[in-house]
Image 1 (cartoon, one colour):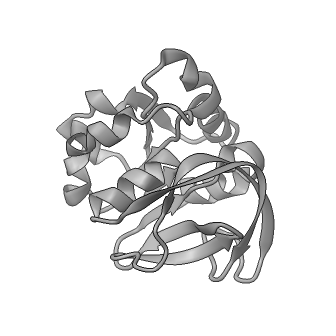
Image 2 (cartoon, helix red, strand yellow):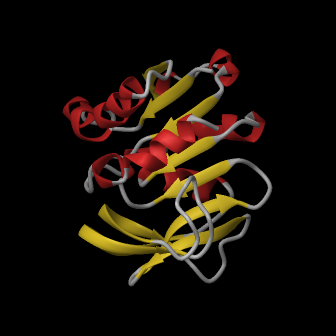
Length: 183
């Protein structure tokens, strides 16, 4: 089953920090995938078995100006994993609110429920690099699966196989991406 990796980076060089590590994890696990920029998404891409929407740099907020390009989410029934900016895109697509709250560096994340192979009550050290957080009081169509001291870090849609993490599992928690690749 093929995975589509969506690059949301405005700057081409950011690919090497935010997209290439995800590709390397899938390569190491012998998973079939292809990568494309979100502005090049086509209807035929809906045929893939799963989609990973990667993150981008702190200063790159271009994807928020182009949320209409993610309308395809309404028609996709298979698993999606949003990483940082990708989680924000999923959340905003379902009318969630973001607020400014910067998190940079190593953080402790505690899982309240099982999430892509991470067991309930597990604590992991993760790498965060975001300045927008999910508003945790009303998550709308999503449920909080993990939190840090600053707020919600992992979400899952209540009825669809859509997952989001604000931290970057490609940096310290590759198992999350590996487990997603096995859905």
